[in-house]
Image (cartoon, rainbow, N blue to C red):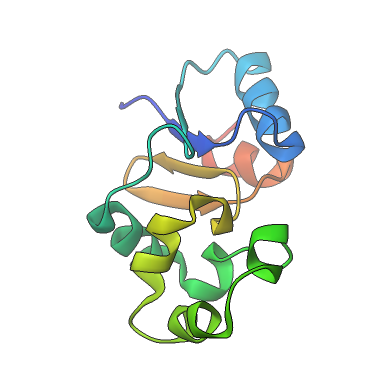
Length: 117
């Protein structure tokens, strides 16, 4: 069984809750800071294919509200990958990869089901 990989931003409350939950369950995991280690276009494309743009893009974020009309339009088209790579804080957090599964956001009950706990 592979080790879960959690992508997020260290000071995000939801990311902290997810990391604490994983630690409390004794689940070792790798943490990748989206700001320090921006996901590749390939990785973002995989996430979009797995969960869809509506789930992956954080439209409530300050970053989204500050986007130009052109960038917002690009998020609706094929330009989403390049905008998300340029502005990784637009990615809803955390993103969890484990056993060929991608999960976005954190709810303890969803993680418990995913990890069969």
